[in-house]
Length: 156
Image 1: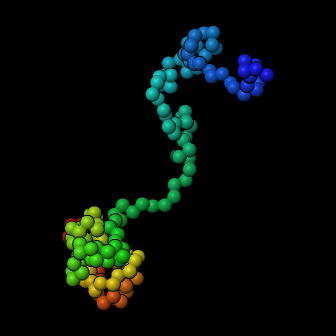
Image 2 (image 1 turned 30 degrees about the vertical axis):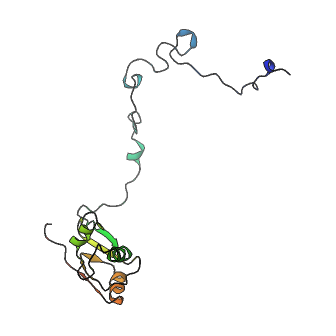
Image 3 (image 1 turned 135 degrees about the vertical axis):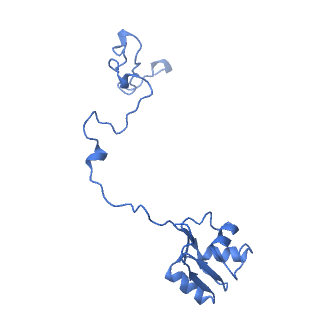
Protein backbone atom coordinates (compact mmCIF):
# COMPACT_ATOMS: atom_id res chain seq x y z
CA UNK A 1 0.00 0.00 0.00
CA UNK A 2 1.24 3.43 -0.92
CA UNK A 3 0.27 6.90 0.36
CA UNK A 4 -1.57 7.78 -2.83
CA UNK A 5 -3.69 4.63 -2.49
CA UNK A 6 -5.15 5.66 0.91
CA UNK A 7 -8.90 6.28 0.80
CA UNK A 8 -11.66 6.79 3.38
CA UNK A 9 -14.16 4.00 3.84
CA UNK A 10 -17.06 4.37 1.41
CA UNK A 11 -19.74 6.60 2.98
CA UNK A 12 -17.46 7.82 5.78
CA UNK A 13 -16.94 11.33 4.40
CA UNK A 14 -20.13 12.88 3.08
CA UNK A 15 -19.76 15.94 0.87
CA UNK A 16 -21.20 19.17 2.24
CA UNK A 17 -24.26 20.54 0.42
CA UNK A 18 -23.37 23.93 -1.01
CA UNK A 19 -26.68 25.76 -0.93
CA UNK A 20 -27.52 28.55 -3.42
CA UNK A 21 -24.60 27.84 -5.79
CA UNK A 22 -26.38 27.63 -9.12
CA UNK A 23 -29.05 25.44 -10.73
CA UNK A 24 -26.74 22.45 -11.24
CA UNK A 25 -26.46 21.88 -7.50
CA UNK A 26 -30.17 21.09 -7.09
CA UNK A 27 -30.26 23.68 -4.27
CA UNK A 28 -29.77 26.77 -6.41
CA UNK A 29 -31.80 29.95 -6.97
CA UNK A 30 -33.76 30.25 -3.69
CA UNK A 31 -31.46 27.90 -1.76
CA UNK A 32 -34.30 25.76 -0.38
CA UNK A 33 -36.00 28.72 1.28
CA UNK A 34 -39.03 28.92 -1.00
CA UNK A 35 -40.38 32.15 -2.45
CA UNK A 36 -40.63 35.43 -0.51
CA UNK A 37 -42.00 35.66 3.01
CA UNK A 38 -40.42 36.24 6.37
CA UNK A 39 -38.58 32.94 6.50
CA UNK A 40 -36.89 33.44 3.16
CA UNK A 41 -35.05 36.48 4.55
CA UNK A 42 -31.92 36.33 6.63
CA UNK A 43 -31.84 36.95 10.38
CA UNK A 44 -35.24 35.44 11.17
CA UNK A 45 -36.02 33.04 14.01
CA UNK A 46 -39.63 32.72 14.99
CA UNK A 47 -39.27 30.95 18.32
CA UNK A 48 -42.32 29.24 19.72
CA UNK A 49 -44.35 29.97 16.60
CA UNK A 50 -46.11 26.90 15.23
CA UNK A 51 -47.68 28.22 12.06
CA UNK A 52 -50.94 29.33 13.63
CA UNK A 53 -51.39 26.11 15.62
CA UNK A 54 -51.73 26.81 19.34
CA UNK A 55 -48.12 26.86 20.58
CA UNK A 56 -46.96 24.27 23.08
CA UNK A 57 -46.39 26.80 25.87
CA UNK A 58 -50.03 27.88 25.54
CA UNK A 59 -51.40 24.34 25.35
CA UNK A 60 -49.81 23.27 28.64
CA UNK A 61 -51.70 23.94 31.88
CA UNK A 62 -50.54 26.79 34.05
CA UNK A 63 -49.71 25.99 37.67
CA UNK A 64 -48.98 27.99 40.77
CA UNK A 65 -49.41 31.58 41.79
CA UNK A 66 -47.07 34.53 42.14
CA UNK A 67 -48.15 36.78 44.98
CA UNK A 68 -47.97 40.33 43.61
CA UNK A 69 -47.29 42.01 46.98
CA UNK A 70 -44.91 39.48 48.50
CA UNK A 71 -42.02 40.72 50.61
CA UNK A 72 -38.43 40.19 49.52
CA UNK A 73 -35.94 40.20 52.39
CA UNK A 74 -32.18 40.54 52.29
CA UNK A 75 -30.85 37.40 54.00
CA UNK A 76 -27.92 37.36 56.44
CA UNK A 77 -26.44 34.37 58.27
CA UNK A 78 -25.19 34.54 61.85
CA UNK A 79 -21.79 33.15 60.82
CA UNK A 80 -21.22 36.13 58.53
CA UNK A 81 -22.29 38.61 61.21
CA UNK A 82 -19.71 37.01 63.56
CA UNK A 83 -17.04 37.23 60.85
CA UNK A 84 -17.72 40.95 60.35
CA UNK A 85 -17.66 41.57 64.13
CA UNK A 86 -14.28 39.80 64.35
CA UNK A 87 -12.97 41.87 61.43
CA UNK A 88 -14.09 45.05 63.20
CA UNK A 89 -16.53 46.03 60.46
CA UNK A 90 -19.54 45.73 62.79
CA UNK A 91 -20.04 46.94 66.35
CA UNK A 92 -21.57 44.09 68.38
CA UNK A 93 -23.20 46.56 70.80
CA UNK A 94 -25.82 47.66 68.29
CA UNK A 95 -26.36 46.00 64.94
CA UNK A 96 -29.17 47.50 62.86
CA UNK A 97 -30.21 47.06 59.26
CA UNK A 98 -28.49 50.34 58.38
CA UNK A 99 -25.22 49.26 59.99
CA UNK A 100 -25.37 45.96 58.08
CA UNK A 101 -25.70 47.89 54.81
CA UNK A 102 -22.96 50.36 55.80
CA UNK A 103 -20.55 47.52 56.64
CA UNK A 104 -21.13 45.95 53.23
CA UNK A 105 -22.58 42.71 54.61
CA UNK A 106 -25.93 43.44 52.96
CA UNK A 107 -26.09 45.16 49.58
CA UNK A 108 -29.55 46.67 50.05
CA UNK A 109 -32.34 46.31 52.57
CA UNK A 110 -35.18 45.48 50.12
CA UNK A 111 -38.28 44.98 52.35
CA UNK A 112 -36.08 44.40 55.38
CA UNK A 113 -33.28 42.13 56.58
CA UNK A 114 -33.88 38.59 57.81
CA UNK A 115 -31.33 36.79 59.98
CA UNK A 116 -30.88 33.04 59.61
CA UNK A 117 -29.06 30.65 61.94
CA UNK A 118 -26.37 29.29 59.61
CA UNK A 119 -22.96 29.45 61.26
CA UNK A 120 -21.84 30.15 64.83
CA UNK A 121 -22.11 33.39 66.77
CA UNK A 122 -19.96 33.87 69.87
CA UNK A 123 -20.12 37.65 70.34
CA UNK A 124 -22.62 39.18 72.75
CA UNK A 125 -24.49 41.09 70.05
CA UNK A 126 -27.59 43.27 70.12
CA UNK A 127 -29.30 42.89 66.76
CA UNK A 128 -32.51 44.54 65.60
CA UNK A 129 -33.87 43.50 62.20
CA UNK A 130 -37.17 43.00 60.35
CA UNK A 131 -37.16 39.21 60.51
CA UNK A 132 -35.31 36.28 62.03
CA UNK A 133 -35.66 32.52 62.21
CA UNK A 134 -36.45 30.98 65.61
CA UNK A 135 -33.13 29.13 65.54
CA UNK A 136 -31.28 32.43 64.98
CA UNK A 137 -33.04 34.06 67.96
CA UNK A 138 -32.07 31.07 70.14
CA UNK A 139 -28.45 31.10 68.93
CA UNK A 140 -28.00 34.81 69.72
CA UNK A 141 -29.63 34.37 73.14
CA UNK A 142 -27.32 31.41 73.86
CA UNK A 143 -24.32 33.65 73.06
CA UNK A 144 -25.63 36.17 75.60
CA UNK A 145 -27.00 38.71 73.16
CA UNK A 146 -30.45 39.80 72.06
CA UNK A 147 -32.13 39.64 68.64
CA UNK A 148 -35.21 41.82 68.37
CA UNK A 149 -37.54 41.56 65.42
CA UNK A 150 -38.97 44.99 64.63
CA UNK A 151 -41.76 45.98 62.26
CA UNK A 152 -40.57 46.96 58.77
CA UNK A 153 -39.61 50.62 58.56
CA UNK A 154 -41.86 53.21 56.91
CA UNK A 155 -42.76 53.49 53.21
CA UNK A 156 -45.12 50.71 52.15
